[in-house]
Image (cartoon, rainbow over all chains, first blue to last red; front, top):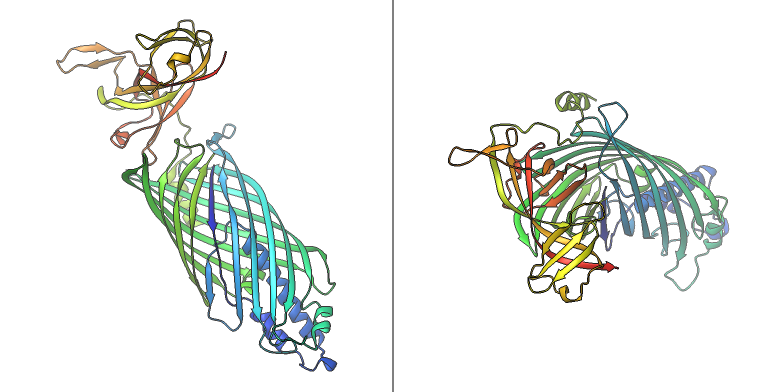
Length: 333
Length: 174
C-alpha cells in the first residue's frame, strides 16, 4: 500500500466567494426595507450551497491539491486549508480466481480544516467579514485490479462528513442594520452538517525506465453532498460535483546515499478539471499542479515508510495561482 | 478508451511472480558477495562460547542446530545464556548465478557442482529490492547496495546464501 501523507502548513486562497458577494451586494442597503426577491435569495442560498460543498471537498478529499492560492477574481477571500491523508494499495497483488488478473485491497482517507474569510464590500453587510470554517473527514476503500503488469484500475467508494459554520465579523463599531435580517435569511451566522458520497475510478499505468518509475493516472471522481442538519432552514446543501484529474508522476533514484538512504527526486504534473458545484464553489474551471520533491528512500529499511523528504508545488489555473511546501512522506503497506 | 485499449494490447496479461522459471542464458556467475542482512525467526540458544564468540542456536522447526559467529556489533554476548529465546540478525552474502543442472563452469573450464539454496523471485531495481524464495516456500526481501547488478538478475536465477556472522542477538525471553 502506498499512502501519501503530505502535511501542508498553510493554504491561502483569494476569491471563490464571488457569487455570494455579488448576490449580497445586490440586496438593498436600507435595513428597514432590506428585502430580496425570491430569485436573489435562491441565488444566494445556491451560492452558499456550492460554497459549502466545495469547501468540504477541498478540505477533506485527499485527491485535491492543497496550496497557497491567489485568485485574480472579483472578491476578497482568503482561505487556509490544512489537510492530511492519502490513499494506497495494501499488500502484494494476488491472483483473482483463475483469471490473469491480480487484485489488491485499497484504502483511502483524509481529514482537513478550512478557514476562509471574505471581505464584504457592498450591500447591507458592507464593511464586515464573513468567515467560513469547515472540518471534513473521509474514509473509504475499494480494490485495485491489475489487468497487466503495468495497467490497473481501482474503483473506490468513500464517505465524507463535513461541518461548516459561518459567522459575520463587523469591522465597524455599530452593527450593520441588516444583520438580523441577513442572519434570519441564512446569509450569515449558521452552521451546517453534511455527508458526501465519493465514487471514483483510478486508472493507472506504471512503467519503469532504467531505474526511473513513470506513473500515468487518470481519476474521474464524483461527489454527491447532502445536508443532514442545519441551524437555519434557509441553508441547505444538495450538491453534485465532478473532478477529473490527469497526472504524470516521475520517481527518479539519484544513485547517491545520505545517512544510509538513497536520495530520490521527481514529482508530478497534474491537471484537475472541476464540474458542477465544485466548479461554482471554487469559481475555477481547472487547476494545474507541478510538484517537485527530494526524498530519502526508506523502503524496507524503516517500518512501512517508502520515502520521507520535502516537496513543493506550484499551482495555476483559471484565475488562480498558488504554491505549497511541506513534508513529503509515502508509506507502502 | 483508446489509450486503455492500447495499453492492454501492449501490456499483455498480468503475470504472477514466480521463482520456478528456468534461468535464462548460459550458465554464469552474475554477482558474488552481495552483502545483505537477514532477520531470522526466534531461535533457542543451545550454548554460548564467549572465547570464540560463537552461539549455537536451534530453530524448533529445524532438526540440526545452527552456529553463528557473533560479530563485533553484538554487545550483549556475555548476557546470553543457554535456553534464551533470541532473534538473530545475520549478515549474509549472496551469490547470484545461472546454473545448468546445478553446475557452473569454473574459470579453468572444469564444471563444478554448486548447491544453490534459494531462487530469485522478484527484482525491483528502482528501490533495490531483491526477493528470494527458499525451498520451503518462504520468501525474503533484501535491500541491496547500490553496487549490486540487479538489472542483470531475473526471477528464476539461482542463489547461494551464506551466513557470515550474527550482527545482533536480541533476547526475547526464556
